[in-house]
Image 1 (cartoon, rainbow, N blue to C red):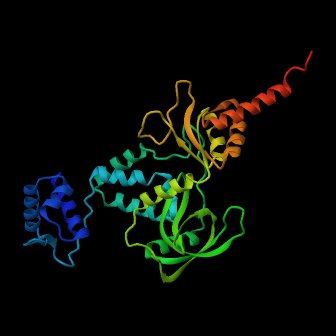
Image 2 (tube, one colour; image 1 turned 45 degrees about the vertical axis):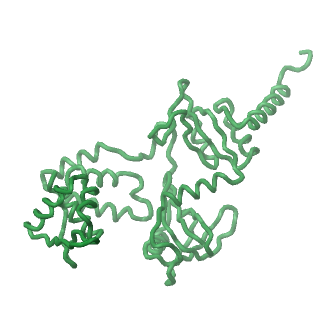
Image 3 (tube, helix red, strand yellow; image 1 turned 180 degrees about the vertical axis):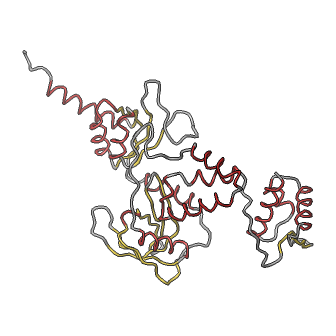
Length: 335
């Protein structure tokens, strides 16, 4: 709709400053001629859009121009309300803020749309506590005051002092340069650097936090998705062992509780993050373990509900153990 496009055009100019007609056309996915007509319409409606000629010219809003643009359409409002239903609403201590924002979004809608959007949002469920394959783990709790200090340091770009309890170690204070916050499967992480080295801290292990006045040493722009992928790759490529396996879906939670990481390993690429069952109902997964001994122990606990496909060294180790057990508990000689 043209009204939505005009709102988007003003928002682009407000957020990004001067833009050429070609850039606006690409962003709005319309022709340059359409952009020029929209600029004329905005000017006629009193929006102070002006043109700058020359090589670095374009369209811009007069400095200081502000206006309230709450013209959310049905799909935009539904997207916001649907996002608010996910378990991520409690991530990073922003649950109450999201609930308040959602109420304001609903209140800003025309009365004729409020009931329809609320009903539509109630019919869409994102990331429920229970799925078809296993019971979801409860979301980790972080004290509100601690989370507020962490979040504030991340957003203001200041150093952060943490009282952190690493696995099997006594809690220690350390000063870090925060980069960003990530939540994965209901677990929250702080991405940071310490003395220039990459560090990833689990939020639930941070016992206390204090924002410091010194500015953090970090780049102005950040690509959290890329940083997270790189850190995951480094973590999984250490001394760990990757095991391709087939698993009875009823034992998936047991695997999640013992493996370092578990990922779907479907034969064909799939847009779904969950593995697709094979014809016999088993799941094809790739699990990461600390070493071969850890993998052998974990697979042995799963018994016949799991089958290791690779690596061959693990299959051979499990075969030897099974043969030894069969010999030990087989019929007594001469019986």
